[in-house]
Image (cartoon, rainbow, N blue to C red; front, side):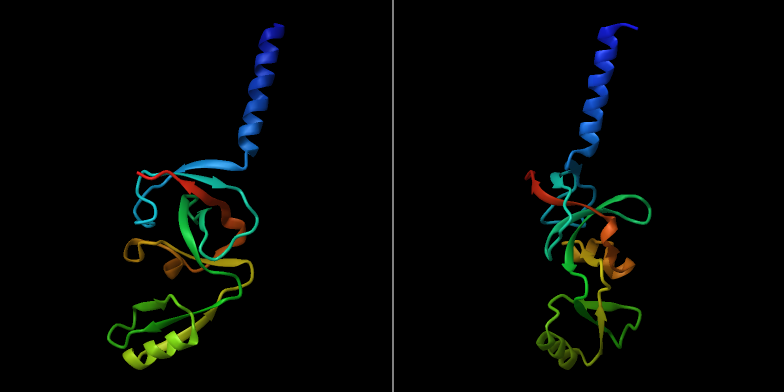
Length: 158
């Protein structure tokens, strides 16, 4: 076997292994669910991390193995509140500020049923910044920590 060919294959294999285990990933945003923060076609740099915080923009795989970018709204073991409109019982509105005072304000204004829900341990509630055009935890519920792949650390403005 040619020594040059063997060295080239070995270098190629090492580069492939390095690229696979690299903690950074370049991702292209698809869709408008994170608008205005991130736009369709925008490029972001994400880093593999183990600790996530409220407000982080994260990358994860959904149940269909698609790459999804959303923002963490509620952390494990936090409570959130939502109310059901009496005029449309199939529609639930999430109260984004989960303070007790806000909950009472909504209750007195709308007179609707308010429900409390606790995020399970090791799960995160994620939403898109474009609340009216985002498929997120409001529909599919919290996601498991194991699903979280990266934290977006930088984006290139477009």
